[in-house]
Length: 159
Image (cartoon, rainbow, N blue to C red):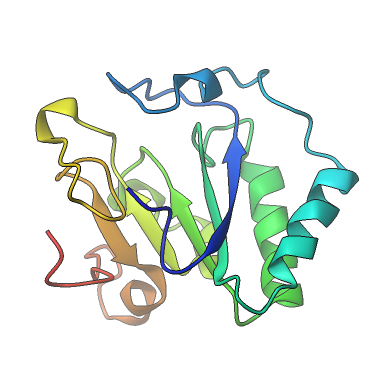
């Protein structure tokens, strides 16, 4: 599984309430785990995003939408979009699009991969998701349509 289109920076956040069976990164479930995200860490990400060959950043985890993460993740996404308007932001979450589509955070995100990982639907041939139930959603196109609760897939012919 890849973490999005192109070569990307990935920020793994700590904190996840989904606790999916056979999660590929259960060490990120504890919201008090991991390393402190401080100004030095932020500058390291900016140094990578400064490179022309980097397509953007992916927020993963854990879950960026865990209550302990939401405000800091949203603020960092806003900074990234202001500083790098041509870089894409991808986000992985165990939440469903229907539950998160109204979040103010969505205005900063280009692609969301939604849904909990289901080991029964695991398919190693999938590029951007771990199980077939998850969806790779084009957030900008979805929000621009008449009914934004119905997701527009990033690649319509992608399983």
